[in-house]
Amino acid sequence: MTSSHTPSSNVRYFVRINPETTIVQNFYSIPPGEAVEDPSFHEITCDDFEHFSKQSGAQWKNGTLSVYTPPPPPLTQQAQNALQIVQQKAAMITAMGETFGPKMRDYVKTLQNISDGSNNIDNTLPDAPEKITD
Image (cartoon, rainbow, N blue to C red; front, side, top):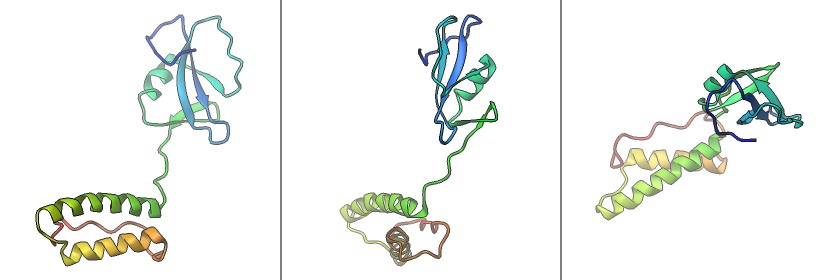
């Protein structure tokens, strides 16, 4: 079985799904006559193969494919990711002989509080200041 693809009427198309989530794990084109015995494989049309294999995510529901957009990571993980970006900027600003401004310091404190769980009120991350020195 292979996931490489050249459109052909002599090929059968399949998706392999995670049985617990029904999220598509991969797309396959399989030569005719080759046995497919894995229950996590589901046959699809060439059109579905062409369309969904180019999408960032797909899900198998009720015998059809649909676009799947994964949920965003938890807010604590988003805050940790934002803090990593701030750390990269901190190295640059220090090298330039400047410091964080009060808006940036407040932003970092909020991110730290979300990241460590002490702020469980906010549902979204705050907007970053436009300038590090703000």
